[in-house]
Length: 614
Image 1 (cartoon, rainbow, N blue to C red):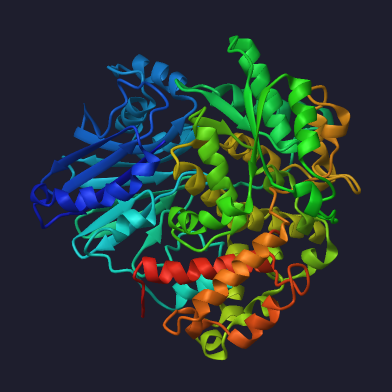
Image 2 (cartoon, rainbow, N blue to C red; image 1 turned 90 degrees about the horizontal axis):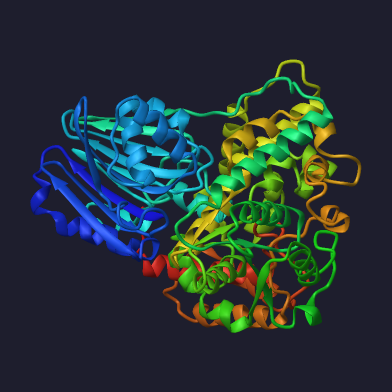
């Protein structure tokens, strides 16, 4: 895993402007603490920060190779899990290798097959290739968008970077935000419309897309889409196929030249990943797998069961670790860990985020990094197998908006009328919702109920999951930890996409097909445990700390929050205490304490990033 950045200008000699590139890659040092490299030619400069995972000696970047069309140079962030198979195929075509790195495999794959190489890649990646002969730039991003990539067109060129902060470090990109950008943050955030960079003139390369840019043109195209068709397999074959795909995925994803661990919550998803990782470790005789869990001081004291979270994780973590024989570490965070690192997590994400859910992952990742460089996590199982409540509750299924954001009216109740008139939240969210529906690959002949489940599945995969993947990437990479997500393997996603809903779930039990596929790997009570989300602290001290800090910020009459918030309404919420009158800011993990944290981050975001409103 790494950080990449670059600057192309077809009318300037950039060899004399490399200091601007250095400014761009400097903010990415956390993504690549193990080394850096730059490369320059007349109209292109490329930069790279490296986190060593495979081939410490041979994987240095930028990397250049000569092909039939001349010399091409790559900077790359990610991992190719099938690089060994690709290397063998390319060697058969006459391509030679001087390293053991997947970077060289990727570059040769591009030289051999151009953009069609993307269909052959299994991995998580964002990369850029400069073709010297044609003076063209090629950018590509993995199918699910696990690895980030942003770009900004210039009058005579283009900038790109792993994170927005890299592009904003360039002198030609002022940190301006207009009406759409503010609507992204305050009507949709922490979610973001795919492709939207929030800052004016800045864009995200969407998952499953590539970009080609030459003098006077920039063109994007999709190389991957979900395809809807009748599911061909019976129940037994479906279970077996899911098990086989997951086993193969994790067998490939535990490959690294550095220590690999798993993140274990005691829930179905992380326990399944851990069980299969243990199996892979045993096959390779690697010794006991290390696992890590996160918890909060006094969780037992303040936790109150809800329909969404019925019990604590800690006893289940202990049970799974003991059953599988892992070497487990429990990381316990105090309120000060969350409050002291709130702004740090803002800078990692580049936007106001998910409060303690972000910050705890940042501190958790920092603890893991002391013992490992690569971790496997259970993200995306709920998205592809339908584990979230909104797949099952009639009011969510019947709503005509994003199901995790149904109470937009409550959310905007803290905003001023002028700001509401400015961002037009209802119109904006509805437009983005309808755009998403227009993308869905429909299946002819489906019932209306099946069509709606397909819609909810698509919305969750393409609008909700990216928020969690952004969080996972930014918080972990902020401390130089690579987290891999086996459930995002595109083969699994493509297969499960077309499994009928009646096969995926049964009655009150969710993700039944996944539970059945994992039979024999885990204890029965773990297999059938109700979903438990990533923990958010219930400690009232966190509420008090966030409330007091927000009150302190509001004493500053120059804060941007005074232009945005209905202060009277906000103070009413503050006076209600930690559990009453919750404003559902985003999903089910962001109550009032998290809302205050989001607004604290918004204040610092505006000032720290020197934002100009258009």
